[in-house]
Image (cartoon, rainbow, N blue to C red; front, side, top):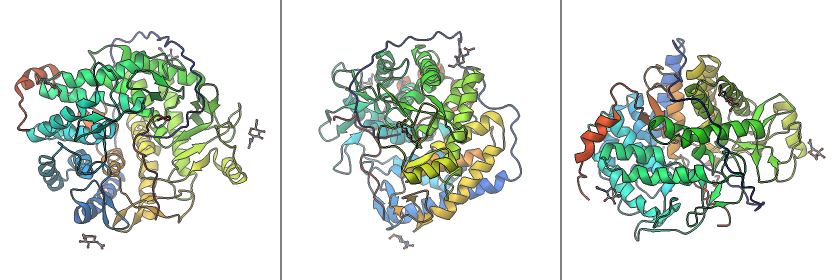
Length: 540
Ligand SMILES: *[C@@H]1O[C@H](CO)[C@@H](O)[C@H](O)[C@H]1NC(C)=O
Ligand SMILES: *[C@@H]1O[C@H](CO)[C@@H](O)[C@H](O)[C@H]1NC(C)=O
Ligand SMILES: *[C@@H]1O[C@H](CO)[C@@H](O)[C@H](O)[C@H]1NC(C)=O
Ligand SMILES: *[C@@H]1O[C@H](CO)[C@@H](O)[C@H](O)[C@H]1NC(C)=O
């Protein structure tokens, strides 16, 4: 969801997006491998994930219930998402998927009473984070539970009615942050991840409420970015100015600050197949352009990475956040029956897993770099002697060593399992469970660590809500019956909240739109601002 890049090059290479024309009428190719079946060992691994969830959630309940996150080392709470109980809302869909019905019911009761009219902390409200965690969590729980808790939809609508203030005047692009007490946005740059990762949630809200305003707001921002001139075809610059709607800088990356904009292009096209083809076409152009310009093979180990591009040069860097790309390319490649894309995707999945396999903890770092036949330029100093040794062993070297409970590598591993049926992906997920139990289980629950390349490096005293929403859901689903939350029936928002796809037999969006028309709410900088890591982790 995030990342910080310095805007060193202001040179703008606006290459008009020469959209490739693809002969596909629909995005209907099955994503899952036919006849997938789980080995007997899956049941024990699935239970091991439930045990981690239960341990983590019980600790949250006893020391932090109603706050955003548990501080697992000090056994207190953290309110980094405006104090509305982020962990509860973010965990709801995972509880439902795991069949943890008592937690789910308790969580729904809590969520039904959240006061979204103001922030419970002095902080402004991130439109992006609030959309993907709270709005996504509420709407997914509403759908998964068979729409039996209308209060979840009411709360989602109350929240979106506040967030809608981020679109000022006729601007297509929302501001990134809002002051809820005055409904005024903070005037600063945003980035394409923040502005382009809203349309699945706001579109779903429109479907259920019958009010198309929500979908129109989010879609016009996504479409605006897709229509911008970009440094490379289909690959928009990371920064965007909500006031002018113009790009800021010319940094291209699949990592933080850009990542989920690319993710949502293809997902929005899948969830709303009758919308403009620009979303699908821009995703395809982005992937094609990435294969031509960004794809690199390491000189050690032949690992396949997607480099960044800073407006003039290739940077040989990647990150944990960027590692969602393998799963996203599998998803889009399968929908389009394009084996070239799927094959590159599986290579990316392998290289990202290699960053886990190559460390002493068996967990991958936040950021890493590599060397390919065209050099080792990263935008900062080249590899130190220690990093060169690491590179010779692993085919990557660590540039930022912490792990803060991020999901992306295991998310892509989950897609690779469901799309291929190759049990090596189950083995990898099982290995991650072991590593988590060995190196993250500390204090009252589980905690991020300061350096994955060391067996002892200090802990991050904040168990982020995406531990519940994403990491443990993707791990669980890897070992769960593939027919239950099938990738051909559900689509995941970037926080791993599943939404029902229109092809699901029980789901008919036209009927929902018609039925829900009468729904009435119950009551009431210089750098693109980068979401998520607004403050760097504090280690204790
Ligand atoms: C954590 O804090 C809660 C709430 O104060 C308390 O009930 C619990 O016993 C504490 N756990 C530990 C292991 O100290
Ligand atoms: C739809 O939602 C928008 C955004 O909150 C609101 O301004 C508008 O009044 C709503 N329209 C209807 C018909 O309720
Ligand atoms: C599949 O995707 C690749 C990479 O984007 C592209 O070059 C190729 O034309 C696509 N194949 C078909 C049949 O469209
Ligand atoms: C990195 O690239 C520079 C410039 O090409 C080169 O001089 C240096 O030897 C390279 N370092 C490594 C470790 O490959």
